[in-house]
Image 1 (tube, helix red, strand yellow):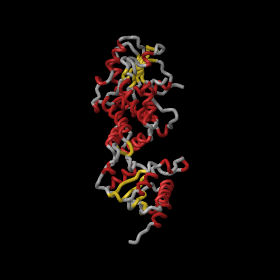
Image 2 (spheres, each protein chain N blue to C red):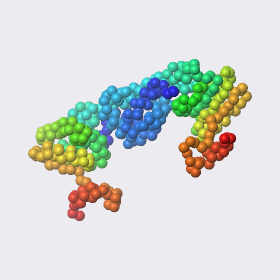
Image 3 (spheres, chains in turn orange, cyan):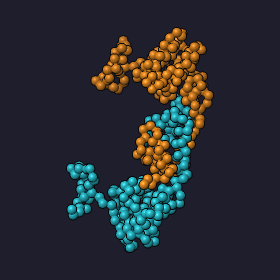
Image 4 (cartoon, each protein chain N blue to C red):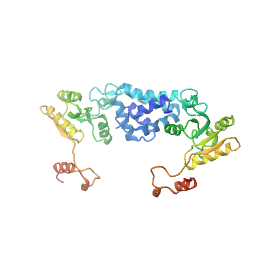
Length: 199
Length: 199
C-alpha cells in the first residue's frame, strides 16, 4: 500500500498545512513540482526560505520590512502628522494600492479577540500610544475591519488615546459602490443611515 | 505603491505558478508563511528541495522512486508475470490503494497527444516493448485513462505488442457503481452495452 515515496508523502503533508489547500490540491501541486524543472521547484523553495530569513517587522510601524524601517517609514515625502491604524500588513497594502493616502501607518498585528485569547498586550497598542505621546501626530485614522472584533479594537484604542491631543477618526462606512440596496445587510443600511450626508 | 517587500512579492509570484493557485490564494499562503514559526515554513521549503533532490524514476518501470528501483519492482512478493500499464505515477497509486492488484507496473509518463506534440518517443513505450520482449510476462493490462488520448495510446501500444507472445487486456468500462443510468453519457452506455456479461 501507499506507493508514494517518503519525500513525496512528506511534501504532500506539508502542503496540506497551508490555508485553502486540501489533500487533492496538495497532491496536484506535488505532481506539478515533480514535473517542472529543478530550477523552477527550487525557486519556490528558496522564495519561502528567503521570506522567512529576510522579512521582519518595521521597528516603528510593524509593517513588513527587509531592513530596520519599512519603505513607508523611510519615505521622507510622507505626511508624518497622519497615522492610519490597521490590523495587518495586508490591510496597509490594500490602502496603499488606492494611492490616496500619504501619511504613515501603525500595524496592530491582529485585533482584540477575548474569545481567542487575544488581549491588548499581544498587539502593538502600547507602541501606538507611545508614538502618539511623542507628539507630531495630528490625526489617527482607525482603519480596523468593520467587524465586531475590529470595532472593539477601534473602541479600545480610542479610549487609550482619549486624553492625548490628537484627533481620532474612523473610515466611513455605508453602502458600497456597485452594490444594490435591496440586498444590503441591515448593519450596512444602519451604518449608511447613521453616516448620511447633506448633498 | 506596492508596499510589499521584494522577497514577499517574489514568493507570491512563485506561488501563482502552482496549479489551482491564483493571486489571492498566493497572498493568503504568503501571509500564512510569514505568520507561522520559522521551523514550519522551512519544513515546507526543505520538503520541496528534498523531493527534487531525492525523487527520480524507477529504472525499470518509471514509477517514482528514491533509489534505482521503486518499492514495487523491489518487492519479491509481486507477481512478475503481470504488467499493468498506466499513464502517470498517480494512476499507479490509485490502483495500489485498491489493494487488489499484485503484479508489476509500467508508467508511460504521459499519453500520446499529437495536438500537443506528444509522440511515442517522448513516452516510455520502447522500454515497455523491451520488457515484454525479454519474456516472463504473461499479461499486459492496459490501464490508460478512458479518454480519446488514453484510448489512442492504448491502441498504439497494443499494435506494438501484437506480434509478441503476450495477452493484452484493457480495464473494463461501463456504468459506475452508485451512478444512475438516466444521467449516464451515451459513451458510457455504449461501453456498458458492448461489455455486457451473462448473469
